[in-house]
Amino acid sequence: MKVLYLTKYSRNGASSRLRSYQYFPFLEAKGISITVSPFFDEDYLIHLYSGKKIAKKKFIKYYLYRFFTLFSIYKYDKIVIEKELFPYFFSCFEKILWLLNVKYIVDYDDAIFHNYDLSNNKLIWFLLKNKINNVMKYSGCVVAGNSYLVERAKDSGANKIVIIPTVIDVEAYKVQNKDANSKVIIGWIGSPSTFKYVKKYITVFSKVLQDQNVELHIVGATEDLALGSNVKYLKWTQEREVALISNFDIGIMPLENTPWELGKCAYKLIQYMGCGVPVVASAVGMNKEVVDQGINGFLVRAEEEWIDKLTLLIADSSLRKQLGIIGRKKVESQFSLQTNCTIVLSVLSND
Image (tube, rainbow, N blue to C red; front, side, top):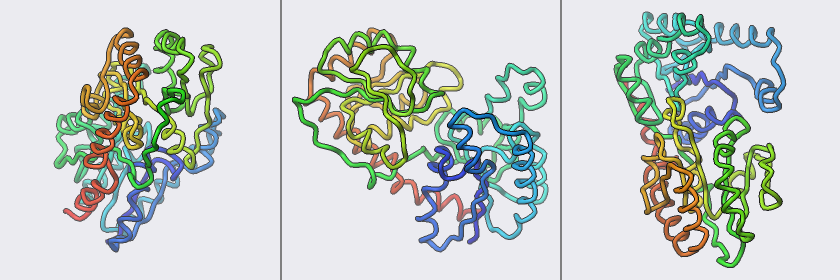
């Protein structure tokens, strides 16, 4: 079988790496030939992560390259599209594939449809508010990362829907034995764009950090919270990611409660739990599916709950260990690459 993956990014783009690239070794071992054609190249990611603007002619190049790639679709047995063929463009090309009886698979790990149907730009809203509904409807199968995305696919009239969470390779995630007498590290991993969720709870962290035996580690963002020397800002790299998370004693995932957050796939929590780290998370969206209250972590809403649950875990190393062990088992059974590879294979194999 020959499969063309039309990803959004190259391997260094997190969503493409997790939803597509990490499955390729398994699929290739099963005799499947994989060809990958990202919409955005590595140069785009370098500019994006450094905050630099992209020249308009580069965007034209990206659109043209994707356009000409579509002329090769009949060389492949299956086509997998990450989110959409052309960002901020009509769904006419997906419709053409449908008219040509190309039953493409389309994959979603966030609520990209809100780029359009909740856009503040009235022209974008008017022209594209139904775009992703159409992309889903024309597809042979929608692969969705959580139940919110599944419901959108159902509403669109998608023919077939399969839920596949965003997962980790549990063989790469190791559980560290923690020294009960060392500092307790509360950890968060993310990007500058998602750091806003942490900043919303700065009052919470200022209170728990009054305990000099507690540190807050921020991985992937450098904006200073002005909370003193007990906050460490650590650079993210793919190579160091697991080691940095393994140092955490408590993993946190604060979120706002808006339609955007409902599309998120709780990947941070899955990473923390994969390292045997207990979690405290906002009771929003898929967080409520990943966290079993009081069993592998805690779901919280108000600031007082954040403080209570963090304080409880800071004071009780045995509870942290207990919750961490249970969390790791849940990841192994539900949110691991090893468990979900066969589902991806079945999606590709079915007509």
